[in-house]
Amino acid sequence: MYKRQSLIVQGQKYQEYEVKAAFLERFTRFVEWPDSTLMKNFNKTFIIGVMGKSPISSILERDYAQRKIKGKKVEIRYITALKEIADCHMIYISYTEYKRIDQIESYIKNMPVLTVGDDKKYSGKGVQITLFVENKHIYFEIDHDAVTRSGSVSYTHLTLPTNREV
Image (cartoon, rainbow, N blue to C red; front, side, top):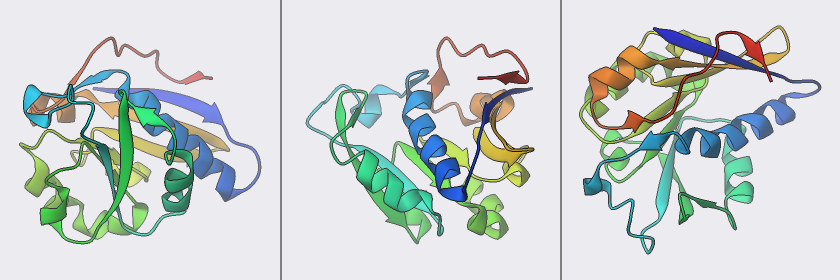
């Protein structure tokens, strides 16, 4: 089951990734991580792993240099090997990693990590939230089956209308 939301994007690609970067934090407002992730320890950082090359990288570094997620400082990590995912709370998977998505999903299937994919092709591939642009709108789809299968993170209060423009 998928839920889809859209946001109008006007202008250049850069603005697209500004919106996507902002939504990464918004998604965390509706997610609960298990106690094993030390989410309640505010001395530990919230780690966003970025897999693949993406314009979002520099935006995340800039935007989260002073901001917090869930009361924690944010660290952006660039993931090149699967074993580097271990400490991440969220993984942003660039469209450049599509050929590796089955390998990525297999590796993290029992890890307490929120997965966000940057291409519509990720929908139905085990990625929990998929961001994509269609007709100058940014959409996100939540794959509730992928969330349920992961069993590692849970969504709270996440009931979204389908195809609503924001």
